[in-house]
Image (cartoon, rainbow, N blue to C red):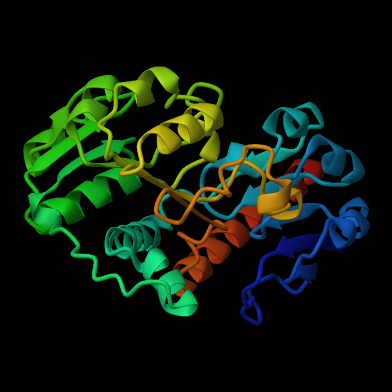
Length: 320
């Protein structure tokens, strides 16, 4: 009997896994201890929790054949090189979290431009009663880095809402999207000189880490608002802190942080010193964008199907 480890705080429908598969579901992860205990006995691993599957963890997975990340941005959750060296197949579930991420992105844009976080603090401490007037999306200049499934879906939403100042940069130019949505292709450095809002939806990898560095931020408008729904590492942390401090009207939202989960020690233990900045400058959340209930269900079903195909292929090769 094969054993599959699933992490993540969600329900697993009864019968989702074949009857000959033993399930270990670690729903609420406080630390790596329970993962370490389970890994030596599993052949399949579905990563839906907050953990990063490091080389050290993979060294304990002596029977692991296939690992599936629930979502995309695989390198943010798995040491792919270490997995490859151990002969562990790594897969993800692309295209199933698109609408969930777009919905969350637009919601955070509204929340942040309305000054909701500052308003909450002011109401709690009684210091002020802010009445922030938020701008209309239709009137704004928007830049998008990354024009994959999520980037294109986000651009379409902006277009539907009447926004006609849409700029983008992608590693591959999207001519069809340009015609359909009126997108303007430009370099990142030219984009940040022009737009008021910058959205980052590009996969995190060695090629894209530190894509937004001091050279880019030094050329940015002084009131640029950045919404990064990809790996935090795409923005150089040192350059970001300097930019936000030197430009009080600038803002950055990151769904994630440079130190995450058990590595995150909060404001007092933050080596990047970004968390000490006020809400008006920076807000970081704990990878919430894709966690819509229906999206998670579809992603889980896809992950299970991917594992089953791998297991079936393995059984067939043994029979041959």
